Length: 553
Image 1 (cartoon, rainbow, N blue to C red):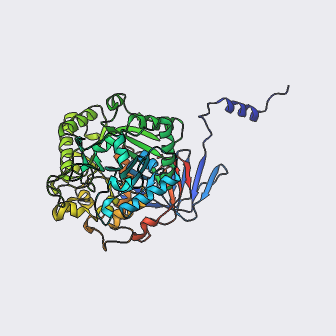
Image 2: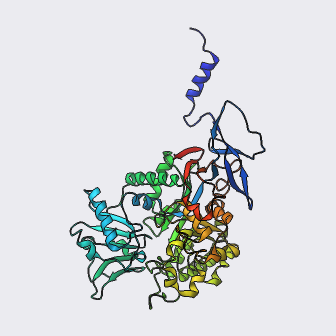
Image 3: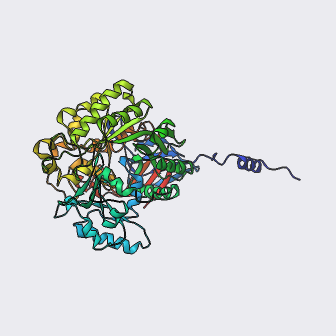
């Protein structure tokens, strides 16, 4: 028998190696209009090289490009390349489910919502429950909550449950309420409200914690089903140019589904998860410690606590009465003592605490509690966050920088809420609402997001809203409370480096530099030269995460 050649021996040797060991591959993308943040400035470049999941170098127009037959070269066709965008506050499972349920976003009336639900039911026969999401009564001529009675005319026997666009209210028909055991005598739970008519009968609308009365009657998803929904959602999010998302409130089952997907290399985007408190087994889950996958595709090191509800459903907790609802101040979803216990427990276990706060009462409560327990637990370095930070007392704005607390805000909430926010708050409180400029001028860090599926996950909608303070029809002229606009660079930073910072990941993502992760997107228009009013029209051609092409138009 002849001796084996050296090439054959090498091939046989490689075949014996672990399947995880692969030959490094370098890719060079040329002919691009590249942009990234370098320090406090915007840096431009014309090419980028990466090997496997890490960036090797970015090249200016003056730099000589490497030449080798071992390098894969991609022509960027003169298009714009920027770091992958990061959504610091979204809900991936809910978004995935929204893709599979009746879509009621932008419905123009109660009947329009019913018609869309009927269309969905006709196309999805065999379902036990008809579910949907997206209605918003403040966009209807009635400006009134819908009723079970209107659903009952079309769904007399099948249970129907339709969540409001913000996820803070739900609309049920009589069959759904009967299955949940809801009667005239059912008492609203703490932190929630069952809307009742003048005769004391439930109308079909459930606010915040009261929604659980209906949700508990719906069979939960299995881990297998959750994984399928999560994959569908992540693939969709990658198509918008999102390479990383902070999932704002998951339970232990959802956490386990993400862990399984990361171990199966089945995640197309990075996820930084927050455990919702309180949720089943939350104490045991926190005691089990934090989690980070080897490839940084999945991270769990934070919690989400909800202080109050939402402004649109008047669940946001205000210090004074709602301007359009005398005698009503909104809802705290936990008592102050319960909230303190959740914060204290989480901080002592070393978890970043991210608290939902919409109203000025909730925001003050969160900041007061943070101030007390950051000092007691010495956890200022954990970069605790206020999610939304939507309505602030002017005197509370400087406290963000003083406490090293991050404001995780969603620009499209302002342009969506502008038709009702001042009605809810009046002429004085509105000056501390959606106050991006005031926060930035007070040296706060703003991490941008969308709160999908409450809003579209499209980050270019958020970039447009933060820069213009206008909707897609360029309304209102000059921008809504235009003094609160962000500059293009500030807005870009809020969706990249500052969003990464808010998740303790600024050393690996958020900008493009040697040694950082190869997360970037190629756009059909130039974000920095296009007229500001057209930023929302930008589309993504390609998305790379960890050096892999995960989306191509």
